Amino acid sequence: MEALKLKTVDDLLLASQQGERIELINGEIVKRPMTRSDHALAQAGLSGQFLPLWRKGSDGGWWIMSEISVRYNEHHCPAHDLAGWRKERVPHRPTGMMEILPDWVCEITSPGHERKDTFTQLLRLQAYQVPYYWLISLEDKTLIAYELDNGRYRVAFSVECHDVATCSQLIIPPFTGQVLDFGYVFGDE
Image 1 (tube, one colour):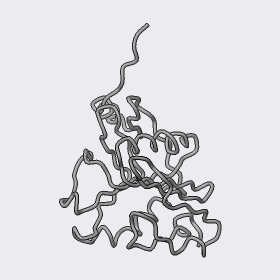
Image 2 (tube, one colour):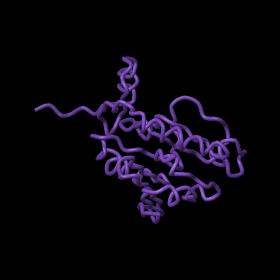
Image 3 (cartoon, rainbow, N blue to C red):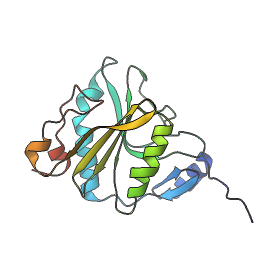
């Protein structure tokens, strides 16, 4: 019986030249789902709300990126829907594949890939001690924001956005200086 050989970041880079949407999860190259319009609009809507933080200098500023590959180790390099780095920790504009751990990651679940986002990613990011992890479900119109507390994630904030008034003025860690409109993110006019 042959032992399973874990794929590496080099394997991911080679495979990605074929133009498929893939990522490296726990030593396995995984095909990413086709991006749906509601997913893309939610991702863009949330990204746009972070522009004031992106434009700030090192005092409270953030580098917020979408569809960014982060190399956690040789066998784990997911492509996050959104990830952010505090400018006080990463003062210069990042380039290339990120090898610096993010301060915040946000995933928007996709049909058929819920387990990866709700379980696998959560455990991996907790193990790597990423301070904040947000999980958004467009189908359920929910957001769960996790925060590290003594090395383990705890729910720091959660909300169901079934009406615009409930979700139009949210302040969610770690972005306590920024008001976010999740009614807009979930597509409510």
